[in-house]
Length: 150
Image 1 (cartoon, helix red, strand yellow):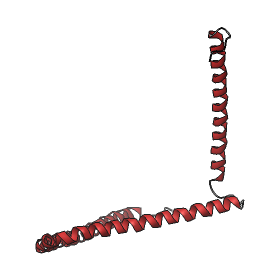
Image 2 (cartoon, one colour):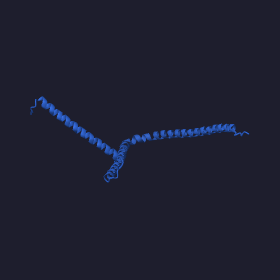
Image 3 (tube, rainbow, N blue to C red):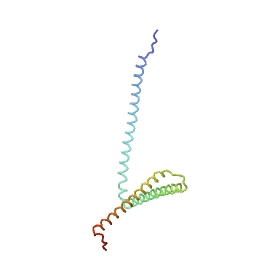
Image 4 (tube, rainbow, N blue to C red):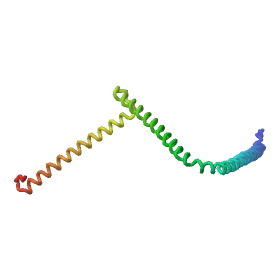
């Protein structure tokens, strides 16, 4: 005895359902896109009208508006920079406090590795300078025949 699952009908129904679903999605997308396009056009028209009406006022008041805009911009940039520097300073002071109280703040390991590398490089530079200094003294003594010239 064979059981029929009805897969043929389910496939046909699924394809039909998918097609209707795609049609509804396309209709909604077209409606939303059209609405946004109309709003965009209205906004552009309103902007052009407002700019046309405001241009004479901007020209008349430009000797006042331009310095005022520059002043407001400088004040805004100054306050933002001041706040940023203040936050940075507080963060650095908190980090140094944690470092001094041995709470192992983030980045301490990298800082210690960099310090060790720099200390090693400084020792290498010192050794190299001493070596070249001795070599130069030896070469000078050899070329002058062992006599010291002053």
